[in-house]
Length: 444
Image (tube, rainbow, N blue to C red; front, side, top):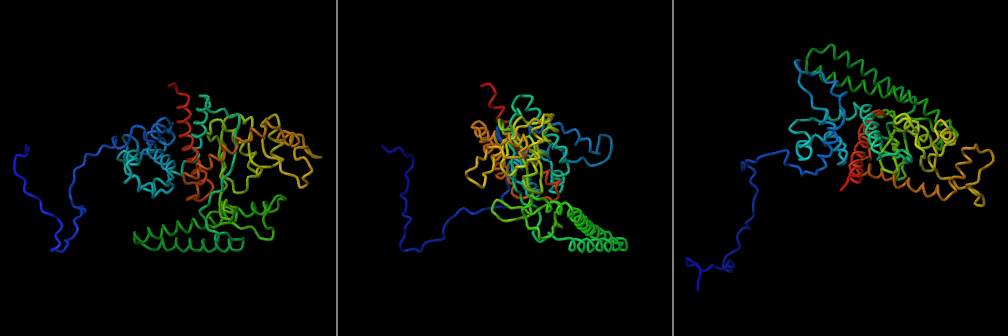
């Protein structure tokens, strides 16, 4: 029985050998079509999206000092600035997503749902983002200390055993920007002469537009002169470094400083070449993998052991019981000082192999101070070797995560700004680690 209501005509075959094939039929874009879409920022992200974790963390921070700097207050004129909580959340989330450019972040705030959700309809520009990232380094460094102290109060961080390691990060300077004293004097004289000429031009030209252009050129020339002065001021430090017995570079080459970033130094990079770079230092609690200290160095690891332990004492009121470092930190002066009762930190660091293979590297040598002799004996025990294995699993892991989040090159210049950027990496890392630690102890 036929179930159709109407008779269906037979279909004709598409293949007609007597006709040439027609043009292919495709779906073409129509970008002039008007569409009405309901937009709900809150519904753009899933409930467990990482941007929501970042915002919840920022809401728990005490940003009072940042709000105190805002001059636009109730009852007074002035355009209200962007909420510091928004800028803080944007940079934390951008760091987690390996976004290190203020211009790229500003584009994402207009195009990407997660960044649009964090902005909440507030328009941001790259200049505000760039300034905020580096202008409050000391404040966010304090927040790092306070957040770690809160984790210590919860019992998630013990500070009993800390591992330290450095990571070389490319500086925002070219190799040809490094000059000697004579070239720096010449660069400073040229920059100062240009500043004087531009100021004269600025005073004589009454046109407003031309004055703004001349003012911008004067600011650029003033910054060049300032960098040249800082480079000249750094030469005595570099000369003193070359005079040390432990210096491994060529002594016949005069010290050079960069006119682009005077604080940067030529360093041997992981690939084997030498580039302008900084030595970023992270100290990590081995039990929790929380970053508890950081610093920016302009030389090798050898002189970074003692300052890091001192920094931890200043931050948390006590030094770590055990401090794990690799052989590049070997410094007998720091080793003796840290072993004193005032500090009481036990350093676990590999003992170098002697040139004579018949000698026992863990046997004290003649003339060794007690702290050095104890270190040699200690590193020969199975217990110390087992503990030392935790260094690579913590300190090097933190460095690798920072690399994955974009810590390959600094886009800012100057040690102060570079350190401020490093603080953002530490805060972002600790944020995600704290979420994991609290989830592990939360009752199911």
